[in-house]
Image (cartoon, rainbow, N blue to C red; front, side, top):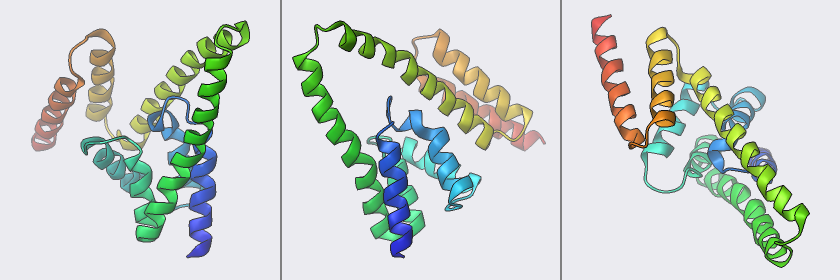
Length: 176
């Protein structure tokens, strides 16, 4: 059990330090680590944990807590949650002080501007990764692409697209 907890801590602490854009930006790598590298979960279990984490109120970091729970119970939940939070929070604390102190320096302005497309690219990769994990037929691929187009082209609440997608998927399941 201790080896699993050490692996959880090591995996999520390392991911924490590159979490530009939050947990959703890390999804492809979290999925790779949890499913392919460590074999802690299947694709289906990971997709279910992702769905539960996003359906529940609170931050998306709940996904990491659910993974920890699945892998090693309460101890796994605590280790995974603390490992994903402590390094990035510590780094953010010291980085914010440095940025406040040197905010007028060209290098700081350049770094801040450069991180925006990095975070956006990571979030896009997360969406593609989750599509590859859960979309198993043409109906679900079309629903995912339509939802992405809806979110990108409108300012409406994304829940409209998600609800519509759920209705279409249920209808398609009943027709087949």
